[in-house]
Length: 209
Length: 217
Image (cartoon, rainbow over all chains, first blue to last red):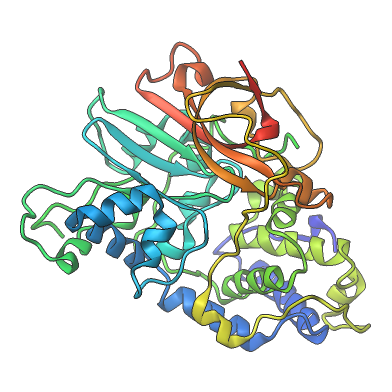
């Protein structure tokens, strides 16, 4: 099958979309008949990403780090090990790294070469993360990218962009919003957005929604 | 390879468009493609760097036009055929015409309860050449094959910030030359060293660099 046979992504053109559906179905049928895959396993994988594995996992990690200084220190030292101590979160691979935002430094994560993303703590990456505009500009004009997200940081704030060019995966530990003294982990987790853990956003402010 | 996938620093792609309340999948087939990739990877059909390299070899116009999971599907078709797991005639027919090869493992439905990535750590063949704080220069290389040293960060001065241990080396894996384990470092660059004097002076960028990408300075 050659590449020129591909069809364009175009939501208005259903005949072309069905061509993709047919090709994907053919691939699944062949791989199943060859004995390589089990369609029921595919169902289970899809269901896991639709229902269990998402940014709530990462938000729980961040909220814990905001309330537990020993956990925060362990997280920044070795995120894989630290997250493994939280039983309710799915295990993570060996190469998770947490990077901390401070008043002086803001971190942002990208994969310029493909779409590397910490699936286990953030779920599947959103389309914008995998798109050419983000991948091309994040390393060169991160403030311009932040502006696309409605975020403006002080000029003096150092911006550190992490290009995920290997199997290490990065989660940003954002700054805890002011006015949240005494909040529980569960309350704090509600403030932690997916984008704040990628570095293209900030946590919600208390009282906002 | 110096392909269209290596996008860091390119201009002209426009604004980042964010979809509010984006679902995990927009079409059912996208989930099938993602799950097939996971299951075939687990089975040992190919390595993640083979999947990346197959996408990088798509023609640039196709790479830019195809949606994310369409690229995955095209790359998967290519790997299936190139690695002798099925014929192009079978994909065309939509059915197996010959028996399958034997693969090391098979992903079962129960395994979806614990979808953990494998480890990329491999035993070191030699001691690490660099330590945090060392000044390095990335090499000026342009291999025709898969590499994880992006163009914008070649032949640039940087500093070793972290050492992540010894990992399998994508450049070798994608070329079917084995794991060839190499030390992996975070190397940080000043924005002006990457983008010139007009760069944001408050910008630093890091890449994850394997030891063969680096020279001491």
